[in-house]
Amino acid sequence: MKKIDELHLKARELTDLNSILALLQWDQEVMLPHGGSEGRAGQISVLSSIVHRKITAPALGEILAELSEKPEELSAADLALIRVMKREYDKNTKLPEKFVAEFSRLVSQALPVWVEARKKNGFGLFLPLLEKIISMSRQKADLLGYEEHPYDALLDLYEEGLTVSELDPLFTDLKDNLSQLLRRKLSQQQKPIPDITAGMPPMSVRDQVRFSEKILQEIGYDFNRGRQDISAHPFTTSLGHNDRRVTNRFRPDSLEFIFSALHEGGHALYEQNIAGEYAETPLDEGVSLGIHESQSRLWENIIGRSYQFWEKYYPLLQELLPDQFRDVPLDDFVVYINKVHPGLIRVEADEVSYNLHVLIRFELEKGVLEGAFAAASLPALWNEKYKEYLDVDVDSDANGALQDIHWAHGSFGYFPTYTIGNLAAAQIWHKYCLFDPDYRQTLVQGKLDRIRNWLTENIYRYGALYTPAELLEKVCGEPLNSMFFIEYLKNKPEFSL
Image (cartoon, rainbow, N blue to C red; front, side):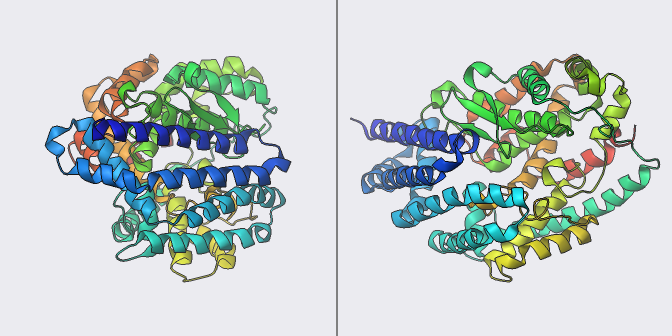
């Protein structure tokens, strides 16, 4: 058997095992009874150890080394497979199996505790496990290695090559621009924007599910190869090439379900439209979290909050939830969903203030990992920064330092990818609009397949064939540039209809 065929066999086995692991984790957040948490933690720990053992096997390292010696004999897809698997091999060989198993068990134990702590508004309930997660995250950074900052090692897990030295000036520039823009947009909202949800009859879960599923179908989500379920925090997961699932959460007085559906649908569209030739390999996924996030934010905000999109789909919302929206004019609805309103909750933030939420998390994660302050200080520091950056008072731990699931997952280094995604989304959308100068009519007429097909042709179908930087350069003709995002916000008409 040729070495490249051996590599494909190992890639298929690892892909299947990771899909099984993802299924256990999906079930943990969607279906698992509370009493099953401890047993599930053990199952995930065992399977994580098996996956780690296989990705770090010396035989795999030998195959990768041998194939790397003669790249001219291999296809572009095979070279990409080698690149991706070698990156995983190199990372994982630095992490002992015992460490991987312990960390996996820890975060599995932490998840239900975080859910309970959030429900009871008690950061102290979660603190002991969070301290262990932070300690093990520091160990992970040391094991992976870094040149300047321990946070660099964790950033690289989610966005290849990203470092604190790159993020610090990027966030400083964004903070300055967004702070000015935030003040300007607030001043332009001369009259109070009415809260269309105030006094609104409660929305049933059934009606919200119906609309969210319909809008997922409209953007092109294939329910034959996916499903929508309910979880404490919306997410998207891949359980195989033809099984890309999304979750949502539904509250009787919040429009969050609409934009969560579009957000998670954007993630899922990316993976549902990867070329079939990459199935059962590590190329069958988005190339990075930043590029992935660019697609969720593009569908959620750039498309999903545009006036033209709702010209087409607001009648459907009024039809499926008539008691809530029948008497609300379209203009009032669009102004409301684009209202600039600094608030407590990241996932409900407007486009102008959203990245300030990410900046706060970046600063806290960076500080706690470098030992500048203890985990017990996180709620107080969180509250101080929200007052300083957004001028809002945090009313509870549930709406403060406990609002995100990421720390319970042990995902330190993840948050900055949201901002990378916002910047890339605006840059990619600019390129699409050059391709389709009549994009407003495309939206009004609901021809979303035209947008999806362009994205598939230029981004989705490639999966992880290219590095994030290579893909963005290929699509946009230049590296990541924050100018497009700032200009998009400055010129967005929906802020002040």
